[in-house]
Image 1 (cartoon, rainbow, N blue to C red):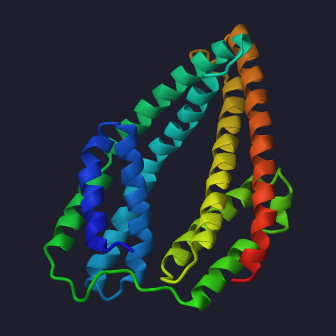
Image 2 (cartoon, rainbow, N blue to C red; image 1 turned 135 degrees about the horizontal axis):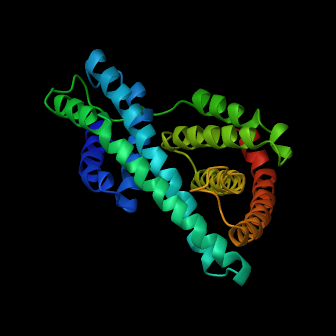
Length: 271
């Protein structure tokens, strides 16, 4: 369990490269920001309330801004992976989609840099680092009641996520699993097997989510009406084949998730 000061230092160090577009630094900054968002509400005694809430608000704004770029990076990673085994009909679509995606990423990064999110966060972080802590800023250990509540929120999705078409519910489950994973990590005596089970669920749900976002974007690309963005006939044919490829991959990822879900149910129900 990491203290607030450590997370602030890590995010501060990652931001300069993240704002220049470095994918690794951007992912690190967003992940650290998300962690900080979860820790701050728990550390009520670590900082003056007004300053803590301002830092929390600025961290939320910053991570949302970085997330708009990071989500595009996740889509690009799927395209890059697909290129390794792409068929000839898919290559034209991959090239076109990759070009459009890179343009969207540059635009998203410019929006992040134009906003004051990073500047405001850094200014607030400096104020936090200059204030003596009211109490040690380590995360408090989670109670078994908190773990049980987090597990019940996950189990509440058991019925809707059995339909692969329920994209929104699968995404909401992913968020609930993230919260459970963090809660479990705050219990000192948590068994490694439980941590692994929850982490694997989060990973496969992330894969399903990324494929859903990419499939929806490819569909919108095929329906594009603006002439300067509209794909040619050959590009449309290739994009259609590419979308079918990701549809198949999504189906396989969903089946893998269902297997993991069924295996994890007894453990989750016992929490």
